[in-house]
Length: 124
Image (cartoon, rainbow, N blue to C red; front, side, top):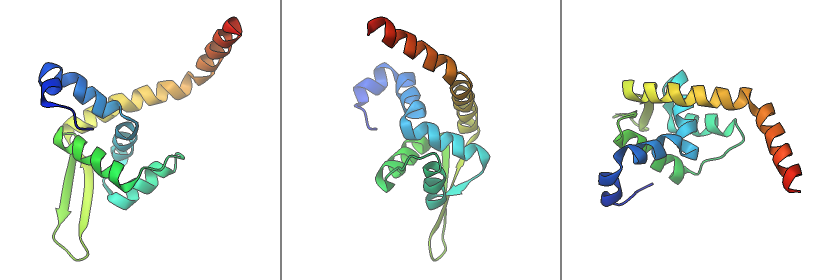
């Protein structure tokens, strides 16, 4: 998810939008709306939807969202190590917006399917 500093300087909001709406960014934000998660719990929660994020990809996504100020990482100095992830106030605001778009997508899927079918038939 790293982009050159030039691109970030030119269009910083686009980069944040890309992070929030990335495949894993959306799922992380929506899951963290419910409650804080440990890494493994979050990975399993995302997998409930039939998607499996690699440890590397989930780690990169969490680090990116943390850098953007959307996710808080709370590392507890215990053995074994315990790290909890939660949303910041800014992250909760973004996640609420993403969740609304997700709900809209689910609610309007029948309309999208009809539109796709009509498009394919017209081109067919």
